[in-house]
Amino acid sequence: MGHPIEGGCLCGAVRYRASGKPLAQTLCHCRSCRLASGAPALAWVVFRADDFVFVQGEPAEFSSSPGVVRGFCPQCGTPLTYRRATKGDTIDVTTATLDSADDFAPTKEIWVDHKLTWACLNDALPHYAKSSVGALPLTKGDTP
Image (cartoon, rainbow, N blue to C red; front, side):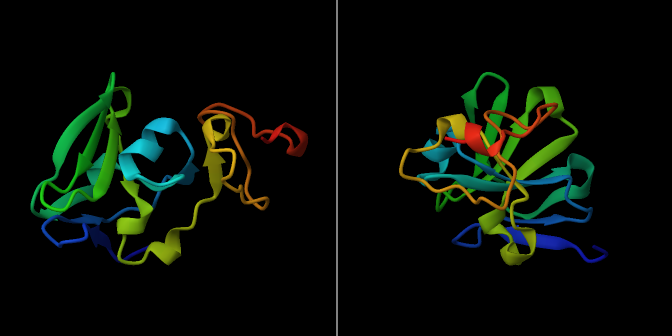
């Protein structure tokens, strides 16, 4: 991806740009992401922090759990970013806020142990009970 990847919030007050290639593309089913987005799951694209910049406006931030900071538009409330204190070299960006969101489909589903019972999983993707970092995907029989 040689061209910048851009996106922003619903009202346009906050805009961002990523210049590097994504490190990961996930669909998260954890309760925290569900509550932060008001949706049954939340898709993320992970970039190197050095490859990411806000080009218009600044997000408000909320510490949603110990060591986790979520960024959102202070005007319209659109969820935008997720950062972990222990992984300061990366930033997760909500996929739906990308101008070209269709180009960044999730490649795995994480925290499926927290999935709502009525939510469907994509059988074509690997599933992880919790985080995928250092974990093996669940086998088909293990998936909730």
